[in-house]
Length: 347
Image (tube, rainbow, N blue to C red; front, side, top):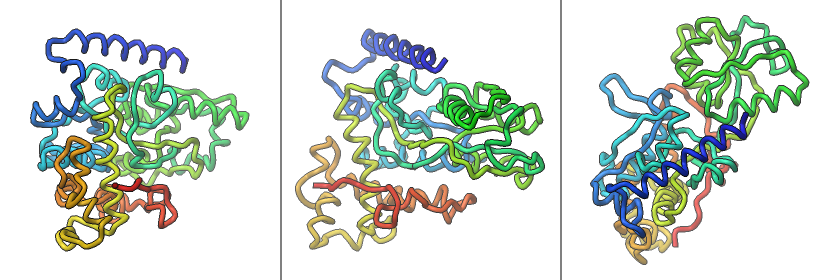
């Protein structure tokens, strides 16, 4: 079933790419998406609009979240204006074809970097912005303490995601045979079925479970099991074959991380301008012209930090200590604090 899904997505990517090639609106051969974005005057980003903390709309329709802020960082780097973004909400099943067809310039929608998506599906993944793992939510009164207790239960998953395969792998490895998997078109449908009691448990990335638990009618009636079923590195993705655009998305992401490593924040950045430290002055575009190599203004990192903040500020504001979720940084801490977050050198 998984092979069929990958083959189907691959076919969509190939057909979509062919359509893009025939479109009168397609860029000329040799042009980059970066050129198209500059000419248009804003970047089009595929996002999730239903996952509090990562991508959602508030009461006045404004897009907010961890992924949303990386979209704003991209706009700040290209245009010096973080508001130059058009958000396109996409379901899990829509997201890859939207990238292939050029409907979106970049996908920043809690998407896991996997081998098949990096090859058959035709994506290139920028640096991981959030290291996640698949978890399981159950009702506290269910008696379920671990995955081993799910025998005989019905488990909900969202179609078009990695979660179904991960779930099958883990339960079969534990020798559990009596479970039933029920798939749904989107996360809203999974959660609705769980709240209605038509499924006994549901699974997605743990960050998604934490986010969704906050929206349940009685959040304290539910729990997330300690078991972690997979590695889920989440980050931006672009279409293959456009190294110039891929480099921009990569180094904009790295700029947020480098800023945190250097201790530069949206509040103190002015004190770093004119620094005698060559690492700092090079990063902030005061020498060597790294922005020009990327097709960006030399002060692109300054614009990102001033308008959006460094990685730590983005994390804390949306998921961490300054958010309703209060997530610990954990493995999403800087490498100097025992985590996996690390930027290559800007030079």
